[in-house]
Length: 355
Image (cartoon, rainbow, N blue to C red; front, side, top):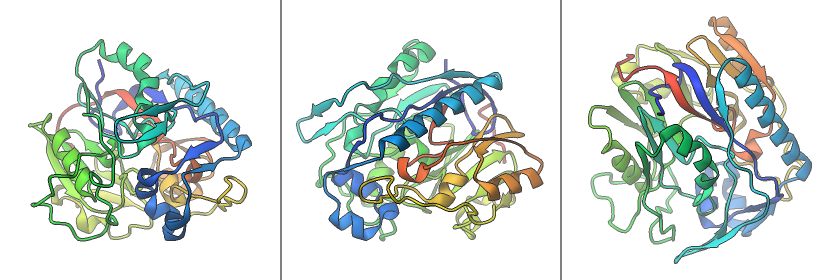
C-alpha cells in the first residue's frame, strides 16, 4: 500500500519516469495554455500543433533517467519504472483528438498523499491516457485499494480558464462551465498540512475535489506561479524550505505557521543554458532556476540534485545536507527536473503537524 505524507520522510519506494522516444511533440491549445508563462507570448501566439525534439537529446535524457533510477536504487530504495511506448498511439475522445504521451514527469498526473493514490484531472490533452503506462506499478502497490481516478475531462475552450495565471479572479463565484484540472505537482505535502498553488478556476475546482478526500488535513492556498509549486519551493526537512531565487518574497504569502521556518535561497544559475538546436523552434517549457531547485529528498538529510545545479549544491552543503548529484540535464526542454521525474510511493513519515 502506498504511504507518503511529505517530501522528506525516508524514501522506501519510488517511480522514475521514461521519456517519450519519438521526436514529435504536440502543442495544441491545452499545451500552449499550460506552458504559456515558460514559452512566452511570441511562441504562444505563433506555435503550430506540433514541434520536434532532437533525437540525440531524447536518447541522452533516457540514459540519464536510467542512471537516476540506478542511483536511487543503490541507496536502498525500491525503484519502479513505467511501461515504454514503442509507437505513436493516436486516440480520440468525443471532444478532441491527440496522441498518448509517455510517463516521463510522473509527479504531474498522480498525487500520492497518505495511503491514497489519486490520478489527478489533467490539463493537457495528450496526457489523458499517460498513466496507463503506470498501471503495471499502480496495480502492484495498491492491490486495487485506495486508488482514485479523476473524471474524464472535456478539455475544450469552453471548459478551460483561458486567462493568464496572474489575472484577477473571483474565487467565490467560479463559473459552472469550468471543469476541474490540476496536477499532483501543485501540492506541497507537509504531513497534516498541504500547501497548494492555485492560479486558475480549473485548478481551484481540482483542489476542492482532492481536498474532499482529506477532511483531517489543513490545506493552505497560495498564488505564486502558473502551475507547479515544486519549481518554486520545496520542504527539505521540518523547519527548512529551499526556494527558487526568483521568488525572494515568498515568505510573505506562506501560511503563518510556516513563516518561522528557515528559507534558504541558492545563488542564481551558474551554468549556461543553450537551447539552440534542441528543438526545431527553440522552445523552452520550464525555467532553469526551477529545474535547479527541483530536487528529490531521500530522507531529511540526503538530497539528490542535478550535478550542474552549482548554487543549489553549494547552499545544501553549507546547510549540512548530504548532496548526491547526478546528471539530469535539459529539464527546461522536457519540462521536468529530478523531482518532476520521480513519484514517491512509500515514505517513512506520518500524518502529523511538522510545523
